[in-house]
Length: 102
Image 1 (cartoon, rainbow, N blue to C red):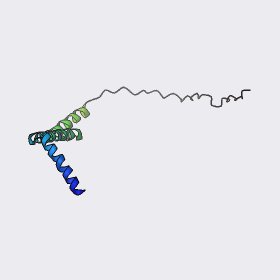
Image 2 (image 1 turned 180 degrees about the vertical axis):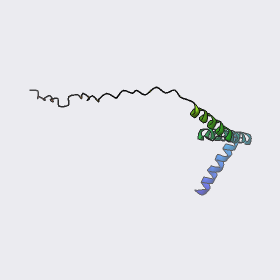
Image 3 (image 1 turned 135 degrees about the vertical axis):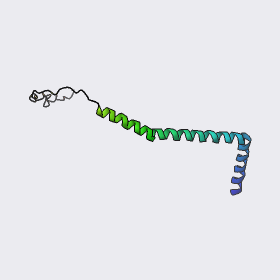
Image 4 (image 1 turned 30 degrees about the vertical axis):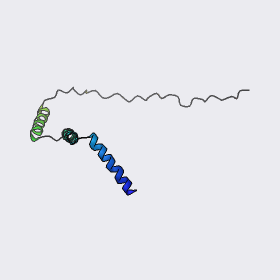
């Protein structure tokens, strides 16, 4: 069974060699490496890895925002109205009686 397995494996490898050339394998590996590098760059962006310049710019913007004079509405001086009790729906409604059909 081991020899049969090796024989079948060799036949599969020979068929693969006929179908794929070394240049094609190299092209596929190159494309895969490019895709991995591209994904790594996307992961870095999503993870929030910022350069020192980016962080400085963000902190500058934060300081500018916090230093701005915001115009807030005036707080009313009247007291709040008394709480009015909520009207609740009737819960003790009589249940209809089921009558057997004759």
